[in-house]
Image (cartoon, rainbow, N blue to C red):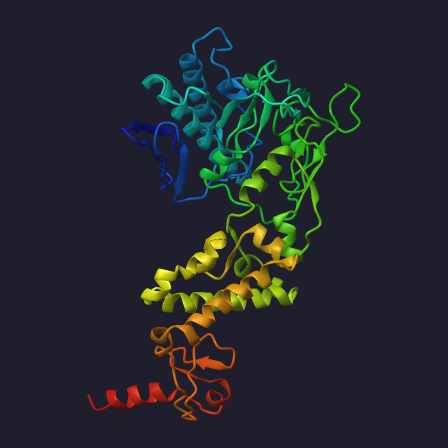
Length: 448
């Protein structure tokens, strides 16, 4: 019988959890928690990608657990949590055995079951080793880090949608320090939505397909978040399904409030910044991902640069910045003046030219980014071309026209040789069939 990894070995040293998964199919996962005991920063290192979207086909209920099992301190079948987890692990193994790897849908379900198995094993190991010391004021539920709040402001509860009345000294409520999830004290142990910060730490990426709807039947007519029954024109009093434009999944009215957000897939594909209705889970995820440089426009949509002149100018400036960076890292005066810190709010601009955050693209469309970037680049140019003799001395002169003008590879009127990086006037270089410097090197090699 074909089996896809259900032997999961977990061990913990002083600072890290290690989960090694061996499979006959030839892939292996390592799941590591690093940092101190009160900082759960998870990373997922994979040789074969596991789908990171919300798990539709696999629920804790199928494994013999309540959907909110990990938010409850006590067992729900009259058993201890350890017994429940053992039962769920065995059920998960059996479901993996039943999957047919030759069927794409079954293979996808198999991978999701493996993810569940890893999660169950991790919780089982933590339970066996005893509680880890954490901040006593922090309550961890579904990876949320809840801290008690007492304030005069009123907020809607994310769990029941009721109002959290902010009466000082009377009502206490909880707020996640990672994603901002708010709930009543009474709703704390019934939270079922996983914190989006945990999904990001596990490697979940932004969806770049426009509203990838899969149909309500694949969700078994249940809200993908809280698993409550949903149905169009229900005669049983069920909630009306609400479609999330970001994930393409259906939610109940308690998990989808009609919030509107700019959708990354629509921006990347059509340069469309019209806000669309999304679920609460998607809203929180997109807010956390807003400033993360995870959108590779040249890879996902190279034609997008034809839709925006500003975007083309921004791309040119970013490529120029990477060239100027080579001057600054070798210039002691630039390091002392900390010129590159002018880009500290967009640190990825000094690392590459192709990765954008959603906030970058929103600012580009709002005509904020280009003026900001132009001002910074002008400061860089002033240092290299005028203020610093060391940087200016690293300029080039055109070997073709022998002009005394100092040239730099980021000048718009220059052309660099792709082989030797020598810089020429663009109009001079186009008159020749080859680079003079490369010709000299080739000529010397014939005599050696």
